[in-house]
Amino acid sequence: MERCIDEVAMRARHSTLPLIDFEGRPSGMVHLPQLAKTPTPQRETWRVRDVATPLSQYTTCAPDDFLEDVLEKVHRSSGMRILVTDGQHLMGIITARDISRLLQRHALRGRERR
Image 1: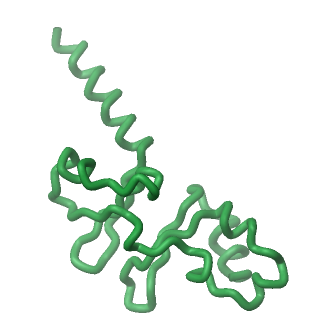
Image 2 (image 1 turned 90 degrees about the vertical axis):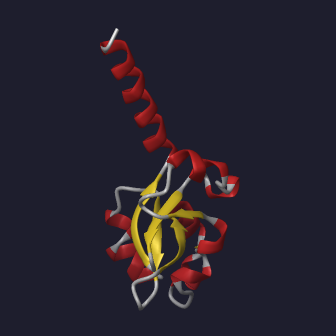
């Protein structure tokens, strides 16, 4: 865990990062505040997956799924993070901020056309 904190978390631009297994498949998400709460002595022995939220607690979708359909099945506990997967590979993550930005752009387009 200490290596992940030093090499990944300290350089991350996001507060939640995907956890990828050795085969390259997403297996969960790591929330940086949760890493920060981990007592220093345990950081040397615990693995990142010990504090990660399992993938089963997140909403997943395929790249060609309609957003409206995906939003109907969102797990509220995931903090509106939707993992976009193509087969077993993570393609991206949609956040509430992404959806808000999309709605704002849509509203702007509506005003331009009037």
